[in-house]
Length: 343
Image (cartoon, rainbow, N blue to C red; front, side, top):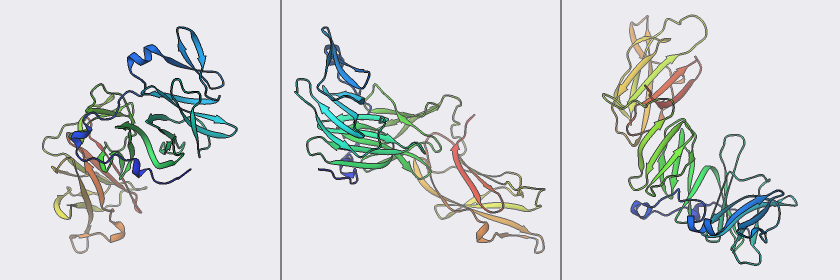
């Protein structure tokens, strides 16, 4: 039986974060003692064998295995056969494995995990790195899928996802969404402390405390994030138009969560106008800059026409950093980006 539907029923229902204290990044293989007793080898043609003192012993699994993982003694795998992709589970001593088909084009999954009688396989897209997570119940034959997943791991036998949220990635633990630094891609890494887990793209790394449901430390391999002192939010705006300077004098009035928070300095449109403010960290906010231009005839500043206004933006301001929002106007539209300030 197949049921290609949302993977939502597999999401972890959090009663409290205390229950998540031993979260994530548990090793994806068997225990050290178990690995000493029995290991496995994948040979040419996708033949999976066990390895012990007696040498290699072929497992009763068909050829074409592309990836496998050992979870609590059971072998979970995917293999290709006659144009199909089969996901399976085999327990030591069993005469044969149990398998079910996955509706994928083929290839190797970017991550494979198993829990109980459910196998989880993530197949990523070549376009943006996001893919589809397949959860197959070996007993019932039911397959559920979740699109838009960049990476996943398991906690208590259920998936925890890295997914897109707003302008960046977020870690989804059941109904709880933990935003990551804007503008980075990331994967789950290993951590010895079960309460903490590491998310990294190789250059930027965040360490999440599952109980506190927030990032407790972040660092970069190439730069140091600036710590907040007088402010933790910067808005920088500039006109980036072709040709000579327009002669316009401008400033931006800044609204935060619908309230007037101040304004940038005033000056030529082609030079950078800056606003700095201290805001609540670890929360979402709505930032709405308003463009004002000098009317030379009336000798006063007036709010620009609506078509010249940037769109309001919803932002998450991480703790412990200064977030810089840059807006650039080309005469027709705005380009907006957000990133941590580095020293």
